[in-house]
Image (cartoon, rainbow, N blue to C red):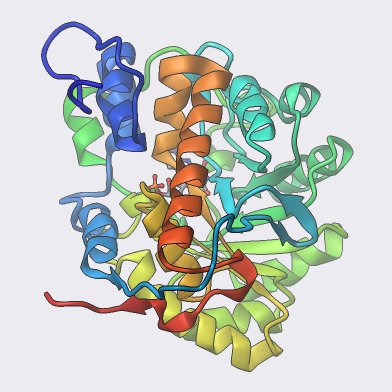
Length: 362
Ligand code: FNR
Protein backbone atom coordinates (compact mmCIF):
# COMPACT_ATOMS: atom_id res chain seq x y z
CA UNK A 1 0.00 0.00 0.00
CA UNK A 2 3.04 2.25 -0.03
CA UNK A 3 3.97 4.82 2.58
CA UNK A 4 1.30 5.40 5.20
CA UNK A 5 2.05 9.08 5.32
CA UNK A 6 2.37 10.82 2.02
CA UNK A 7 5.35 13.17 1.99
CA UNK A 8 6.40 15.92 -0.30
CA UNK A 9 4.38 17.83 -2.85
CA UNK A 10 1.86 15.60 -4.53
CA UNK A 11 -1.12 14.23 -2.70
CA UNK A 12 -0.83 10.49 -2.43
CA UNK A 13 -3.38 8.38 -4.25
CA UNK A 14 -3.11 5.96 -1.35
CA UNK A 15 -6.24 5.93 0.77
CA UNK A 16 -5.43 7.24 4.26
CA UNK A 17 -5.06 4.21 6.48
CA UNK A 18 -5.19 5.89 9.85
CA UNK A 19 -6.72 9.07 11.25
CA UNK A 20 -3.31 10.72 11.50
CA UNK A 21 -2.85 10.29 7.73
CA UNK A 22 -5.61 12.88 7.27
CA UNK A 23 -3.67 15.63 9.03
CA UNK A 24 -1.15 16.49 6.27
CA UNK A 25 -3.84 16.06 3.61
CA UNK A 26 -6.11 18.50 5.42
CA UNK A 27 -3.30 20.98 5.82
CA UNK A 28 -2.74 21.09 2.06
CA UNK A 29 -6.39 21.99 1.56
CA UNK A 30 -6.86 24.65 4.21
CA UNK A 31 -6.04 28.35 4.35
CA UNK A 32 -2.87 28.77 6.49
CA UNK A 33 -4.69 30.95 9.02
CA UNK A 34 -7.56 28.46 9.28
CA UNK A 35 -5.03 25.65 9.67
CA UNK A 36 -3.19 27.48 12.45
CA UNK A 37 -6.50 28.11 14.22
CA UNK A 38 -7.49 24.46 13.97
CA UNK A 39 -4.17 23.08 15.23
CA UNK A 40 -3.50 25.63 17.91
CA UNK A 41 -3.32 25.00 21.61
CA UNK A 42 -3.00 27.82 24.12
CA UNK A 43 0.39 29.50 24.66
CA UNK A 44 3.23 26.92 24.74
CA UNK A 45 0.88 24.03 23.86
CA UNK A 46 2.10 21.97 26.81
CA UNK A 47 -1.40 20.63 27.48
CA UNK A 48 -2.02 20.01 23.80
CA UNK A 49 1.07 17.77 23.61
CA UNK A 50 0.35 16.19 26.97
CA UNK A 51 -3.09 15.00 25.79
CA UNK A 52 -1.28 12.72 23.31
CA UNK A 53 1.72 11.89 25.49
CA UNK A 54 -0.48 10.74 28.37
CA UNK A 55 -2.32 8.29 26.11
CA UNK A 56 1.03 6.99 24.87
CA UNK A 57 2.25 6.39 28.42
CA UNK A 58 -0.63 4.01 29.13
CA UNK A 59 -0.37 0.32 28.32
CA UNK A 60 -3.14 -2.10 27.42
CA UNK A 61 -2.69 -5.49 29.03
CA UNK A 62 -4.64 -7.93 26.88
CA UNK A 63 -6.58 -10.97 28.08
CA UNK A 64 -6.29 -14.09 25.93
CA UNK A 65 -8.34 -17.13 24.96
CA UNK A 66 -11.67 -15.48 25.60
CA UNK A 67 -13.27 -16.51 22.34
CA UNK A 68 -14.05 -12.93 21.30
CA UNK A 69 -14.54 -12.80 17.53
CA UNK A 70 -16.91 -9.87 17.03
CA UNK A 71 -16.79 -7.26 19.79
CA UNK A 72 -20.00 -5.28 20.27
CA UNK A 73 -19.33 -1.54 20.13
CA UNK A 74 -22.88 -0.30 20.45
CA UNK A 75 -23.85 1.81 23.42
CA UNK A 76 -26.14 4.65 24.42
CA UNK A 77 -25.34 8.20 25.47
CA UNK A 78 -28.06 9.74 27.64
CA UNK A 79 -30.37 7.13 26.21
CA UNK A 80 -29.51 7.79 22.55
CA UNK A 81 -28.17 4.69 20.78
CA UNK A 82 -24.89 5.04 18.88
CA UNK A 83 -23.00 2.45 16.82
CA UNK A 84 -19.77 3.13 18.72
CA UNK A 85 -18.78 5.27 21.71
CA UNK A 86 -17.00 7.80 19.49
CA UNK A 87 -18.87 11.11 19.22
CA UNK A 88 -18.15 14.36 17.38
CA UNK A 89 -16.93 17.15 19.71
CA UNK A 90 -18.46 20.60 19.41
CA UNK A 91 -16.20 22.78 17.31
CA UNK A 92 -16.82 26.21 15.92
CA UNK A 93 -16.78 27.19 12.29
CA UNK A 94 -16.52 23.97 10.29
CA UNK A 95 -16.82 26.30 7.30
CA UNK A 96 -13.07 26.88 7.61
CA UNK A 97 -12.53 23.24 6.61
CA UNK A 98 -15.23 22.79 3.96
CA UNK A 99 -17.79 25.05 2.27
CA UNK A 100 -20.68 22.84 3.43
CA UNK A 101 -19.45 23.19 7.01
CA UNK A 102 -21.49 21.50 9.73
CA UNK A 103 -24.06 20.29 7.20
CA UNK A 104 -21.44 17.91 5.80
CA UNK A 105 -20.06 16.91 9.20
CA UNK A 106 -23.51 16.18 10.57
CA UNK A 107 -24.20 13.90 7.59
CA UNK A 108 -20.84 12.17 8.01
CA UNK A 109 -21.50 11.60 11.72
CA UNK A 110 -25.00 10.28 11.01
CA UNK A 111 -23.67 7.92 8.35
CA UNK A 112 -21.08 6.67 10.85
CA UNK A 113 -23.94 5.95 13.25
CA UNK A 114 -22.97 8.48 15.87
CA UNK A 115 -23.98 11.85 17.21
CA UNK A 116 -22.51 15.28 16.74
CA UNK A 117 -22.47 18.21 19.14
CA UNK A 118 -23.15 21.45 17.26
CA UNK A 119 -21.21 24.46 18.54
CA UNK A 120 -22.75 27.82 19.46
CA UNK A 121 -20.35 29.30 16.89
CA UNK A 122 -21.16 26.93 14.01
CA UNK A 123 -20.79 28.30 10.49
CA UNK A 124 -24.21 26.89 9.55
CA UNK A 125 -27.18 27.81 11.72
CA UNK A 126 -28.56 25.23 14.10
CA UNK A 127 -31.70 25.00 11.92
CA UNK A 128 -29.66 24.34 8.76
CA UNK A 129 -27.54 21.69 10.48
CA UNK A 130 -30.59 19.95 11.86
CA UNK A 131 -32.19 19.96 8.38
CA UNK A 132 -29.12 18.18 6.90
CA UNK A 133 -28.42 15.85 9.81
CA UNK A 134 -28.91 12.11 9.41
CA UNK A 135 -28.13 11.31 13.06
CA UNK A 136 -28.76 12.74 16.52
CA UNK A 137 -27.45 16.18 17.55
CA UNK A 138 -26.55 17.81 20.83
CA UNK A 139 -26.16 21.57 21.16
CA UNK A 140 -23.07 23.11 22.80
CA UNK A 141 -23.77 26.36 24.58
CA UNK A 142 -21.37 29.21 25.23
CA UNK A 143 -23.03 31.64 27.60
CA UNK A 144 -22.07 35.21 26.78
CA UNK A 145 -22.87 38.34 28.72
CA UNK A 146 -26.23 38.42 26.96
CA UNK A 147 -28.35 35.80 28.78
CA UNK A 148 -31.15 36.62 26.37
CA UNK A 149 -29.00 35.28 23.54
CA UNK A 150 -28.29 32.08 25.48
CA UNK A 151 -31.97 31.54 26.13
CA UNK A 152 -32.86 32.13 22.47
CA UNK A 153 -30.17 29.65 21.40
CA UNK A 154 -31.52 27.05 23.81
CA UNK A 155 -35.05 27.47 22.43
CA UNK A 156 -33.78 27.12 18.87
CA UNK A 157 -31.72 24.03 19.74
CA UNK A 158 -34.83 22.47 21.32
CA UNK A 159 -36.98 23.27 18.29
CA UNK A 160 -34.26 21.89 15.99
CA UNK A 161 -34.49 18.56 17.82
CA UNK A 162 -31.19 18.60 19.75
CA UNK A 163 -31.28 16.02 22.52
CA UNK A 164 -28.96 17.55 25.10
CA UNK A 165 -27.29 20.86 25.98
CA UNK A 166 -23.53 20.82 26.47
CA UNK A 167 -22.57 23.78 28.66
CA UNK A 168 -18.90 24.63 28.17
CA UNK A 169 -17.51 25.56 31.56
CA UNK A 170 -13.82 26.06 30.81
CA UNK A 171 -14.08 29.33 28.90
CA UNK A 172 -14.65 32.36 31.18
CA UNK A 173 -12.32 34.00 28.68
CA UNK A 174 -10.72 32.78 25.48
CA UNK A 175 -7.40 30.94 25.59
CA UNK A 176 -4.54 32.65 23.78
CA UNK A 177 -3.83 30.63 20.67
CA UNK A 178 -0.41 32.05 19.93
CA UNK A 179 0.28 29.73 17.02
CA UNK A 180 -2.71 31.32 15.30
CA UNK A 181 -1.96 34.89 16.42
CA UNK A 182 1.52 34.63 14.93
CA UNK A 183 0.22 33.91 11.44
CA UNK A 184 -2.99 35.92 11.36
CA UNK A 185 -4.93 38.61 13.14
CA UNK A 186 -8.28 37.21 12.11
CA UNK A 187 -9.90 34.19 10.57
CA UNK A 188 -10.38 33.83 6.80
CA UNK A 189 -13.89 33.70 5.25
CA UNK A 190 -16.03 30.80 6.45
CA UNK A 191 -15.71 31.75 10.10
CA UNK A 192 -19.01 33.57 10.72
CA UNK A 193 -21.12 32.22 13.56
CA UNK A 194 -24.42 31.65 11.77
CA UNK A 195 -26.59 30.99 14.82
CA UNK A 196 -25.71 34.26 16.56
CA UNK A 197 -28.32 36.95 15.84
CA UNK A 198 -26.84 39.86 13.94
CA UNK A 199 -28.36 42.43 16.35
CA UNK A 200 -26.20 41.15 19.23
CA UNK A 201 -23.38 43.64 19.88
CA UNK A 202 -19.66 42.84 20.32
CA UNK A 203 -19.85 43.57 24.06
CA UNK A 204 -22.66 41.11 24.57
CA UNK A 205 -20.43 38.41 23.06
CA UNK A 206 -17.80 38.56 25.79
CA UNK A 207 -17.84 35.29 27.73
CA UNK A 208 -19.80 35.41 30.98
CA UNK A 209 -18.12 34.55 34.30
CA UNK A 210 -20.45 31.65 35.06
CA UNK A 211 -21.19 30.15 38.46
CA UNK A 212 -22.84 26.92 39.60
CA UNK A 213 -26.10 28.88 39.80
CA UNK A 214 -25.97 29.15 36.02
CA UNK A 215 -26.19 25.39 35.72
CA UNK A 216 -29.38 25.57 37.79
CA UNK A 217 -30.54 28.47 35.59
CA UNK A 218 -29.94 26.46 32.41
CA UNK A 219 -31.88 23.55 33.83
CA UNK A 220 -34.73 25.90 34.71
CA UNK A 221 -35.04 27.24 31.14
CA UNK A 222 -34.92 23.86 29.38
CA UNK A 223 -36.06 20.33 29.97
CA UNK A 224 -33.15 18.95 27.93
CA UNK A 225 -30.43 17.13 29.90
CA UNK A 226 -27.40 19.30 30.65
CA UNK A 227 -23.87 18.01 30.07
CA UNK A 228 -21.04 20.01 31.65
CA UNK A 229 -17.96 20.20 29.46
CA UNK A 230 -14.48 21.13 30.62
CA UNK A 231 -14.30 19.48 34.05
CA UNK A 232 -10.88 18.28 35.30
CA UNK A 233 -11.16 18.46 39.11
CA UNK A 234 -13.04 15.66 40.91
CA UNK A 235 -14.72 18.15 43.27
CA UNK A 236 -16.13 20.02 40.28
CA UNK A 237 -17.47 16.71 39.00
CA UNK A 238 -19.29 16.22 42.32
CA UNK A 239 -20.66 19.78 42.15
CA UNK A 240 -21.80 19.15 38.58
CA UNK A 241 -23.74 16.09 39.69
CA UNK A 242 -25.18 17.97 42.69
CA UNK A 243 -26.34 20.73 40.35
CA UNK A 244 -28.15 18.25 38.18
CA UNK A 245 -25.75 17.62 35.29
CA UNK A 246 -26.71 14.46 33.44
CA UNK A 247 -23.23 14.14 31.98
CA UNK A 248 -19.70 15.49 32.34
CA UNK A 249 -17.05 15.87 29.67
CA UNK A 250 -13.56 15.54 31.13
CA UNK A 251 -11.80 17.97 28.84
CA UNK A 252 -9.15 20.66 28.64
CA UNK A 253 -10.71 21.94 25.42
CA UNK A 254 -8.10 20.19 23.32
CA UNK A 255 -5.37 22.20 25.07
CA UNK A 256 -6.89 25.46 23.81
CA UNK A 257 -7.83 27.12 27.11
CA UNK A 258 -5.55 26.80 30.18
CA UNK A 259 -2.06 25.78 29.11
CA UNK A 260 -0.56 23.63 31.85
CA UNK A 261 -3.84 21.87 32.61
CA UNK A 262 -3.51 18.11 32.96
CA UNK A 263 -4.11 15.71 30.10
CA UNK A 264 -7.76 14.72 30.10
CA UNK A 265 -6.96 10.98 30.24
CA UNK A 266 -4.93 11.64 33.42
CA UNK A 267 -7.79 13.56 35.00
CA UNK A 268 -10.38 10.92 34.06
CA UNK A 269 -9.98 8.24 36.78
CA UNK A 270 -10.46 10.63 39.72
CA UNK A 271 -13.50 12.19 38.05
CA UNK A 272 -15.03 8.77 37.38
CA UNK A 273 -14.51 7.79 41.00
CA UNK A 274 -15.97 11.06 42.31
CA UNK A 275 -19.03 10.80 40.09
CA UNK A 276 -19.66 7.19 41.11
CA UNK A 277 -19.51 8.26 44.74
CA UNK A 278 -21.70 11.30 44.20
CA UNK A 279 -24.55 9.88 42.23
CA UNK A 280 -24.31 6.14 42.35
CA UNK A 281 -23.09 6.34 38.76
CA UNK A 282 -26.14 8.14 37.37
CA UNK A 283 -24.24 10.88 35.55
CA UNK A 284 -22.39 9.73 32.45
CA UNK A 285 -18.71 10.66 32.11
CA UNK A 286 -17.18 11.35 28.71
CA UNK A 287 -13.68 12.39 27.69
CA UNK A 288 -12.13 14.40 24.90
CA UNK A 289 -8.62 15.52 23.98
CA UNK A 290 -6.02 13.74 21.90
CA UNK A 291 -8.11 10.74 20.83
CA UNK A 292 -6.49 9.62 17.58
CA UNK A 293 -6.53 5.79 17.77
CA UNK A 294 -8.96 3.03 18.61
CA UNK A 295 -6.57 2.07 21.40
CA UNK A 296 -6.99 5.60 22.86
CA UNK A 297 -10.75 5.08 22.88
CA UNK A 298 -10.31 1.70 24.56
CA UNK A 299 -8.03 3.19 27.24
CA UNK A 300 -10.59 5.91 28.01
CA UNK A 301 -13.46 3.41 28.18
CA UNK A 302 -11.48 1.05 30.40
CA UNK A 303 -10.75 3.97 32.75
CA UNK A 304 -14.47 4.64 33.06
CA UNK A 305 -15.57 6.93 30.23
CA UNK A 306 -18.89 6.03 28.66
CA UNK A 307 -17.81 7.52 25.32
CA UNK A 308 -15.21 9.85 23.87
CA UNK A 309 -15.54 12.95 21.74
CA UNK A 310 -13.20 13.53 18.83
CA UNK A 311 -12.28 17.07 17.77
CA UNK A 312 -9.61 18.01 15.23
CA UNK A 313 -9.57 14.70 13.29
CA UNK A 314 -13.20 15.29 12.30
CA UNK A 315 -12.23 18.61 10.74
CA UNK A 316 -9.29 16.92 8.96
CA UNK A 317 -11.72 14.43 7.44
CA UNK A 318 -14.12 17.25 6.56
CA UNK A 319 -11.38 19.25 4.81
CA UNK A 320 -10.22 16.22 2.83
CA UNK A 321 -13.51 14.66 1.83
CA UNK A 322 -16.57 16.52 3.15
CA UNK A 323 -19.24 14.29 4.69
CA UNK A 324 -17.53 11.19 3.32
CA UNK A 325 -14.22 12.23 4.90
CA UNK A 326 -15.92 12.64 8.28
CA UNK A 327 -17.60 9.26 7.92
CA UNK A 328 -14.25 7.67 7.10
CA UNK A 329 -12.36 9.24 10.01
CA UNK A 330 -15.07 8.05 12.40
CA UNK A 331 -15.11 4.66 10.65
CA UNK A 332 -11.35 4.29 11.08
CA UNK A 333 -11.61 4.95 14.81
CA UNK A 334 -14.50 2.55 15.11
CA UNK A 335 -12.64 -0.16 13.15
CA UNK A 336 -9.52 0.29 15.26
CA UNK A 337 -11.56 0.15 18.48
CA UNK A 338 -13.17 -3.09 17.33
CA UNK A 339 -9.76 -4.52 16.43
CA UNK A 340 -8.20 -3.48 19.76
CA UNK A 341 -11.09 -4.98 21.71
CA UNK A 342 -10.71 -8.28 19.90
CA UNK A 343 -6.96 -8.29 20.60
CA UNK A 344 -7.68 -7.51 24.26
CA UNK A 345 -10.32 -10.23 24.59
CA UNK A 346 -13.13 -7.75 25.31
CA UNK A 347 -16.58 -8.66 24.02
CA UNK A 348 -18.50 -5.44 24.59
CA UNK A 349 -17.92 -1.81 25.51
CA UNK A 350 -20.33 -2.21 28.42
CA UNK A 351 -18.33 -4.93 30.12
CA UNK A 352 -14.73 -3.80 29.85
CA UNK A 353 -12.16 -5.10 32.24
CA UNK A 354 -10.89 -2.11 34.31
CA UNK A 355 -7.57 -3.93 34.75
CA UNK A 356 -6.97 -3.58 31.03
CA UNK A 357 -4.96 -0.38 31.45
CA UNK A 358 -1.65 -0.21 33.23
CA UNK A 359 0.57 2.82 33.71
CA UNK A 360 3.37 0.93 31.99
CA UNK A 361 7.04 1.73 31.97
CA UNK A 362 7.94 5.39 31.63
C1 FNR B 1 -12.85 23.43 19.65
N1 FNR B 1 -13.47 23.12 20.86
C2 FNR B 1 -14.68 23.74 21.17
N2 FNR B 1 -15.33 23.42 22.33
C3 FNR B 1 -16.54 23.97 22.61
O1 FNR B 1 -17.11 23.65 23.66
N3 FNR B 1 -17.11 24.87 21.74
C4 FNR B 1 -16.52 25.25 20.59
O2 FNR B 1 -17.06 26.03 19.82
C5 FNR B 1 -15.24 24.69 20.30
N4 FNR B 1 -14.57 25.05 19.16
C6 FNR B 1 -13.41 24.41 18.80
C7 FNR B 1 -12.82 24.71 17.58
C8 FNR B 1 -11.68 24.03 17.18
C9 FNR B 1 -11.06 24.37 15.85
C10 FNR B 1 -11.12 23.03 18.01
C11 FNR B 1 -9.90 22.26 17.59
C12 FNR B 1 -11.70 22.76 19.23
C13 FNR B 1 -12.93 22.06 21.74
C14 FNR B 1 -13.49 20.68 21.35
O3 FNR B 1 -14.84 20.55 21.69
C15 FNR B 1 -12.76 19.55 22.07
O4 FNR B 1 -12.75 19.80 23.45
C16 FNR B 1 -11.32 19.34 21.59
O5 FNR B 1 -11.18 19.63 20.22
C17 FNR B 1 -10.90 17.89 21.84
O6 FNR B 1 -9.55 17.69 21.55
P1 FNR B 1 -8.98 17.07 20.16
O7 FNR B 1 -9.81 15.84 19.83
O8 FNR B 1 -9.12 18.15 19.14
O9 FNR B 1 -7.59 16.76 20.53
